[in-house]
Amino acid sequence: MAQAPESLELLSNDTTDKSLDRDCTTLSRHVLQQLQSFSPDAQDLSALMTRIALAGKLIARRLSRAGLMEGVLGFTGDVNVQGESVKKMDVYANDVFISVFKQSGLVCRLASEEMEKPYYIPENCPIGRYSLLYDPIDGSSNTDTNLSLGSIFAVRKQEGTDLNGEAADLLSVGRKQIAAGYILYGPSTMLIYTIGKGVHSFTLDPSLGEFILTEENIRIPNHGSVYSVNEGNFWQWDESIREYIRYVHRTEGYTARYSGAMVSDIHRILLQGGVFLYPGILPKPEGKLRLLYESAPLALVIEQAGGRATTGHMDILDVMPTKLHQRTPLIIGSPKDVAKVESFIQNGH
Ligand code: AHM
Ligand code: MG
Image 1 (tube, rainbow, N blue to C red):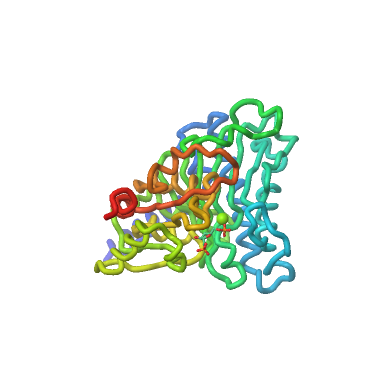
Image 2 (cartoon, helix red, strand yellow; image 1 turned 90 degrees about the vertical axis):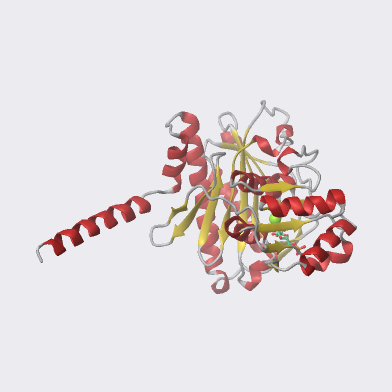
């Protein structure tokens, strides 16, 4: 009889310590743990991630009340550099990222889907050695119907002085990204990041206002049942992609999932396996997705988790862009499933 309370007490102490430790594994602490250093570079990366997380919290807060506030839903009436109608949330989220990096001393230039040219924060420029590339709202067609959305980000080190303000050094391969990830605005808000040392997920705890570690070193399954593609484009694809889709239709064990926001489709694939495709279409052989702030950051995340990302002919991370808003076909996900699509593209079966 005397032993029961004692062992219960031990058990409860143990549990308390573990959950407290978990609650304290915030994003900034995790980055420093990953780098095993308090060097200025490590502190910078930790501060960068903390600011990106703040942007995610601000966007998540607005989305969570979108139906209750004026001026959140719907279009602005403008068309962006991509020729797409701009939503009010696109503008808000774009400005959020600029705002959180003002006076940060970290980022001199930001480039996004919503801005024709990079945005300079002059007060950061002599010292800010980093550039942020981002898609403020991924899947914006989901905004007005309260469905999942995302933000995608990548951090690069500035190369050269960029005295003429052309940001030419941003036109380099995705392997130069020093950090990348995405924020998923779903039933809960999650932030997934890599600094080239595996992939880690965090969930926003609204009661703390902090992203808390959910899973470390996520590994993508070698194969999964999901294929994720907009089949509405079927007749605009190359025959090799049509053949691949016919193959999954007649093969047992495949299931289709497509949400309209690739962050959420790719998040499912990261955790459960499968393949996401946005191939080229007849009027646009380069596809829809933008290399520098959509495909390349997601490619780094998926490669770091043991998956693959390709155009069908080369790794996304090796594609050398010639312009800021360059588009690329994207096939991304589990190694075995990406290889299958590749084999249809390259060998016809
Ligand atoms: P966006 O950043 O303008 O929202 O475009 C990217 C999105 C992806 O999230 C999604 O997979 C795709 O575009 C959906 O496009 P489509 O409607 O052509 O299937
Ligand atoms: Mg986008």
